[in-house]
Image 1 (spheres, rainbow, N blue to C red):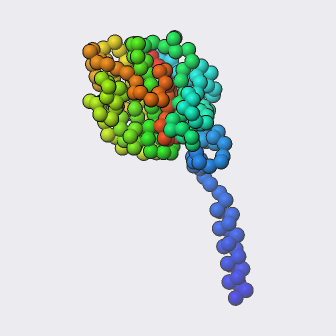
Image 2: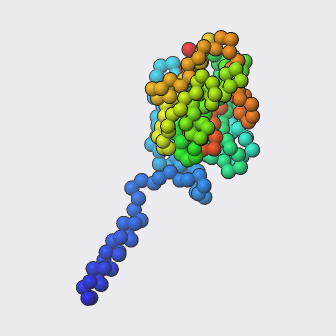
Image 3: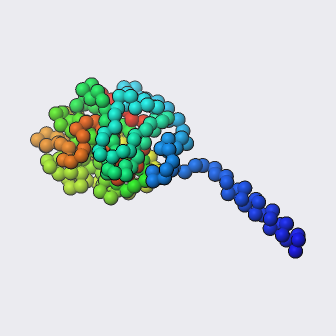
Amino acid sequence: MRFIKIIFLFLVIILCSCSGKRLNKPFVSMTEYEPLALLTEYEPNFAQILPQGWEAMMNPNDLSGWEPVRYAGEAQPIIKNGVLTLPKSIYSSMTGINIVNEHLFPVVDYAIYYEARRIEGEDIFGGLSFPYKNSYATLVIGGWGGRICGLSCIDGKCALDNETTKFIDFENDVWYSVCLRVTKDSIHAVLDDITIVSIATAGRNIHLRGGTLAPSLTFFTFMSSGQFRNMRMKRL
């Protein structure tokens, strides 16, 4: 009996010591009271190796040249090692960041590339509002319950009910690449290898959806926590 007790105590000690070891720290839920910096602490350092003609849109470790969009919420965007985190806000449905010197940004004949993923939530995790001539439009990634992609707005219709509407299943913690191309006569967007927007703009009314979206070049999330990386642009 004494021998059995010794063996039992030995096993308990081993189990307790193993339970404290974690090979990888998972992403921290936005609802926990831990610093948001933990979200990017365990990311690798994504060096932006830019192809010829492309320019980085953000510094890898500070938000100089960008400012948070105040959607009546308190969520604070952060960037570390080239990964921008837009956390889900408790008091507002959106979190975003817009460019400061927008007058230096082209309104046509440009391309924007970035990668995005949803950390938590079930809606837009990789949204981008962008200039088009004397107006703006929005590229929706994962909206209306998490599956809708498309362009808002075209002739008064948003990405939910115009010809660009696409239904795509997304997984959390998976990076998706997005490439937007804007010219005088067309707007195109590709998600990984799927064309989600391809329209000729002649005679069409391209505009923002009414509401809280800012008329500015803006990366944003809606009812979700999202991350962005490798944000770059190219003049065409």
